[in-house]
Amino acid sequence: MLSTATRVGVTEVLRATMTAIKARRAQESAESAANPAQWAP
Image (cartoon, rainbow, N blue to C red; front, side, top):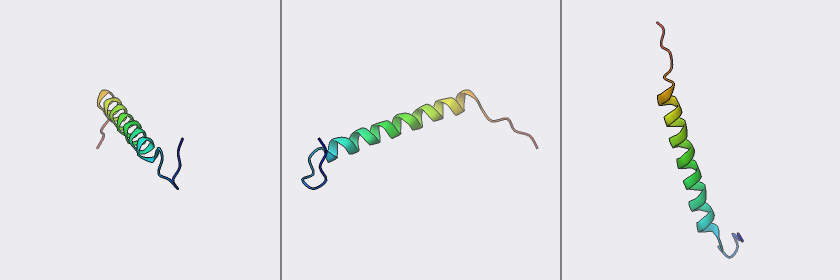
């Protein structure tokens, strides 16, 4: 349950959101490292 009025569950939701964001960033970083952009002058 999430309630901003009583602050019940807010911390857990924020922590889960940050975990998801960090995981997505790591995934995108790994994908870009595996497929480097082609450079052309």
